Image (tube, rainbow, N blue to C red; front, side, top):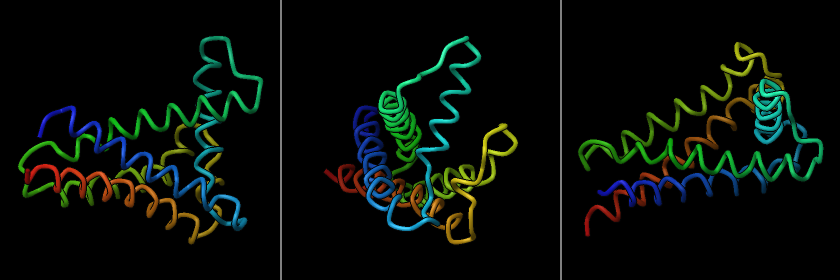
Length: 146
């Protein structure tokens, strides 16, 4: 597959991840709040440059845009290598992203609670990233046959 096809499939996976997260984040107090983690990370990054985003809506939009771009690029790597390995790559990269989202915030100096509140929160966080990867992988697998 071409890099463009991989990137578009990665974008589809990133959109799936965000639609899932945005649809469920306020349905229960234990749902993962990846958005809050992303907002904190973005503010921390901008703080290193002596700036930040004070408007809550602008912060949300900037975080969502950054999340879509970064996850699209990340998920595009699922298509690297042989076509027969696409779904295995999707599972591996999806699990790595989800586990990373759960275990890396604290060492990075971020508040891990939005994604680690309960065991269910942790498992759902991992499942969200895995779902995005599987969507990207399925699209790559389907389009690679043509």
